[in-house]
Length: 446
Image (tube, rainbow, N blue to C red; front, side, top):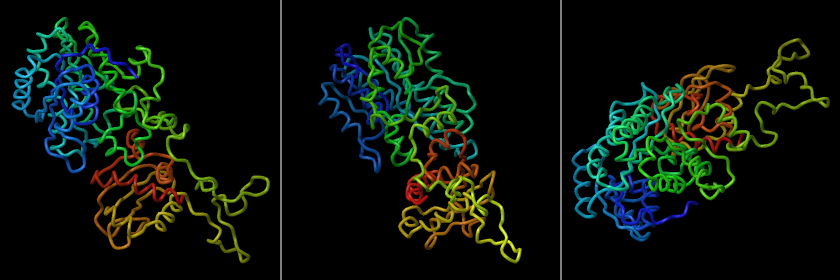
């Protein structure tokens, strides 16, 4: 890992969203130098599901060797940013570094994103970054360090990054456009850069988006903290850059990246917005075992017995065989992969699954065995089958029948299916996120 050099000793960092995750990791790295940290975040009281508050973060920062100023700041509120900046200047004498880390995310399509969510992402991500920068800049211009660092991606105009979550992409690219504009506007006075991870980072947000087990495909926040530290200790002439954490750290001589992995040696999930085709990434992940494979002898596509010469016997090639009287015999007709999957799902539904899920899922499948199928995990003992469910649907999922089978058998992660556009979701996103946990229970039987 990147060692501390002491270059940030006595510097004051104003970090938004620093009560947990990436923001806190950057704060703790700087604190080891003896830096002053303004923890500008919303969480003053313990959250129901998310860890940490501005006060617990302050305790950790001071234990690491820094000085902390916890401030309640919602970056959507201009006055709260202004008040926190004034407190920071009064306490520490100025501001040397601003890290715009606070961000909101909703990976939903245009028609499925409520206006309230659109406003939240635009206000927190783009507007919040712009406001925090504007309010801090008069003080940054007086500093010899003078850096703004936005946790935002390189601007990639490949439509794949817009089609599944247009509002989120616009809001994150707004943060990146602040880098483009402000780096030029304040060149020579304030360095302005962006930092983005090469792979998924294990945070509370990733747990929510990726579901159970996703942490094994992630790196720890330490890698972004090290990369941020490297950027913030460079001269002001290093400006207008869109930095990828791994690339920068390799240039700094880091060779062992297993130290940053949650599960060293495990294949990693690439992050959004990097110029690699998501379909290709999904195939590479499967090839390297990033998703569970079918158990031996249980592949739906090859579960039919074969003859001694490897040929499939009569009745196992999808054709109908005839009985002694010439009538078609249904007994030897194999089930299709989708029908077989639903048969197994039916057998796996239990009262516990219904009680813990409380959702009705409709699947609109294309291709072989296409059509409408459903899983009711909300009513009575639950049910599953072809056609429309007899009750109100909570989530509609559209995909090919082949990808459906892969998803329920563990070969295709729902997160990757969604990222690559193979899976489209309408309805209750919270219930949709329960799908991966549900699939884990079902896939063991496939």
